[in-house]
Amino acid sequence: MFRTHSIIYVLTIALTSFAGTAFAQNPPAYATAAVADSARPAEQRADDAARMPATVIAFARVRPGAVVAELRPGRGYYTRIISKAVGANGKLYVVESAERVQA
Figure 1 (spheres, rainbow, N blue to C red):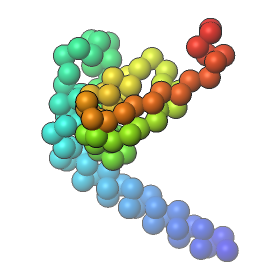
Figure 2 (cartoon, rainbow, N blue to C red; figure 1 turned 30 degrees about the vertical axis):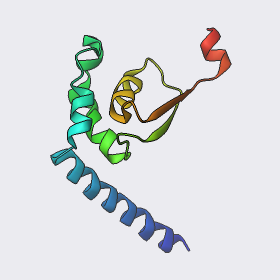
Figure 3 (cartoon, rainbow, N blue to C red; figure 1 turned 45 degrees about the vertical axis):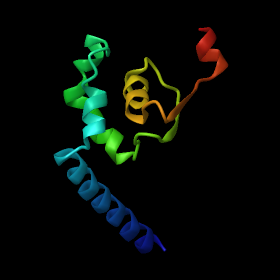
């Protein structure tokens, strides 16, 4: 049993790494355009090199017209990017706890 789980775990890591490499080399135009949006705050754009948001958007399969739920959005770094990536025909639902909203 342990060996089976270990093999599945290793395969998952290998496949995820391969897929991540493919997305990192060539993120789709809609993802790079969402990241390049000049309306995003400068302090958020400064984090783009480390966070690789176009790659994350592509890997998560966020596309124009998609319906996305973002849980606990924090300060909105990905909220702004996702909203641009899904476009006018998509939907973005942001879910936050009442305790955090009131704080």
